[in-house]
Image (cartoon, rainbow, N blue to C red; front, side):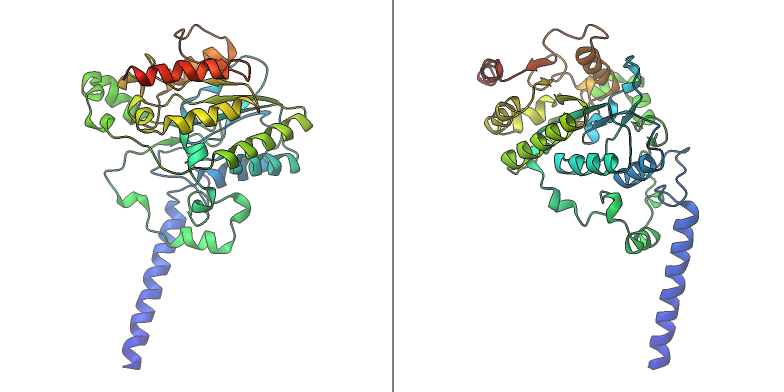
Length: 329
């Protein structure tokens, strides 16, 4: 019996070593060799981006923080002398952006401007829920145990159905959905009528007060370091927007206006009601990102009702306008 158990353990050890060698050589996640020249199914963006920026503290001087929804913002279109980097990562939250900013500043990274992209998950998701998520862990949290976990996790490469994504970690910081974009343009009508647009990406939770406190601290930090801060609310797809607790969303907007002015791209308008502008009910496409850049940096002429500048002086009027949209549904 003892010999049988020893053989089983030996076999398991050999298989585990083979998997580790395979994962290290293939490096599907870019964690070991950092090669992003080919599309990948997934990348621990939070880790690899912070690691890269700390190694190149003078390469960029403007950063956009947000969840995966801001990945479609082409910041290279902004012609103001700054060099932008898109810090998008899955379900990025204000508390994490605050930690990222402090870490970057502490390591001598030059920061002249910061863009913050907010949405419903910003005040719904609890950052504590992601502490054990291998693909969202902060760079400082990585240790030999985490690297070992990446060596032994089953690679996404085995999932042939996954549409792979280009991760421009060493350039713009964006992610590019070239395959998806091609499919949409080949048959726009099929995309527009896809049943997935009936499925809301809405989550539940309530961290409005905590989130506002974190954003206030971010604003204080940027003021202390002379950093220009631009805040905006992402354009939420109609299906998800109507599934939200709009009273809670509006309260978040009300409190946010007393901390900082912001551009509000959410609500019901010709952009958010058109499925062509979205990959799904959570993520907008680059053509929408371009319109957002045009509004915030006055580089073009986006639709008139897309992107309202909100301050504490007009927030109540703005919320009343949003509530009137609800009444018409």
